[in-house]
Length: 115
Image (cartoon, rainbow, N blue to C red):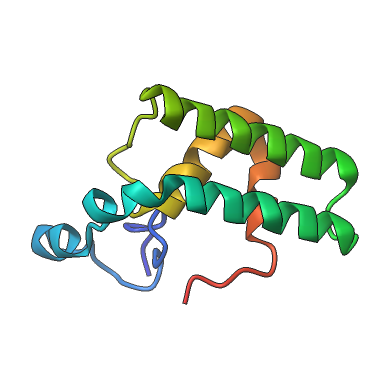
């Protein structure tokens, strides 16, 4: 397999890029971007739970929470930028979180399923 789609949630499963028609059909951002606050609050609660379970350090959890608050503030201020590779509200928030706090943002996926 090639890495044509390695930045998509399903990347690496197919040999060719998805058709533009499929990508357009699958684009939920125009609908689910209104859920930005719920997505961020859910991620904050999840990060706190991972810390309580001992999966994240306190420092990692604090960094995630601060980064998520910064992402929320960008939404509140109307300056959050959707990127062309953002598949849905979850990937948009997670992408921006990674830009702000670096690799620890990836730990927010621990134990989560996108299925």
